[in-house]
Image 1 (cartoon, rainbow, N blue to C red):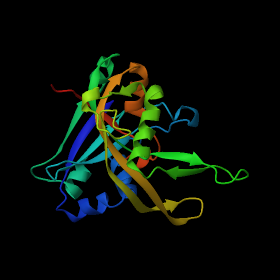
Image 2: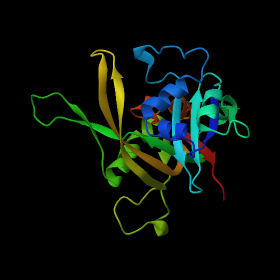
Image 3: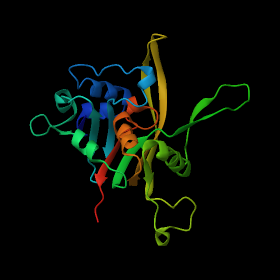
Image 4: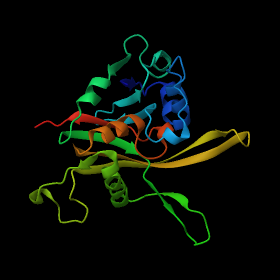
Length: 240
């Protein structure tokens, strides 16, 4: 597995075009591989390593593309279209050693952009429908419900650090909630239709409870809309 970081030059029209459409950015990410990543059988799709990506908007007005996948990517086309062709590039790291070193009880800072959804049935005789969580509280609860099967637990705050509001018990911040709408080619109807996703970014601290399950989360993604910049969780050592 490889982890890649690419700095986006938002002053370029090509970069702004890619950032405006998860569909276009997905295509650019997949074009980074000389050999297309192997198809994943439906039965294994939830746990097999796959290509994941995420756009981060940092406090210094820096925009970064993170990419995780089983093959080493070549982002030359992205540098030419959305980077700094003469002075910039990308960094790719061997992710395997980091993943192998994850152990139970370890604590990390994490970031995740996800598509927090749930299935509801409005009438007893109707099929369930996937619906987005819209409030910060419900989006936080969505992530907390993923903890056990995903191999981690979000660290709880010490009692003296909790606010007097419900739902402030964890080291977790939900931010950058947005609805993204873009066109997508429909192979069945040979046309285009609109796709709308609600996304949220999660920053916090976690403790590893099941290293194997967490490794699957980091390489197979968490939640829905993985092709469109959701599901990639990254970890960093906790400082202090």
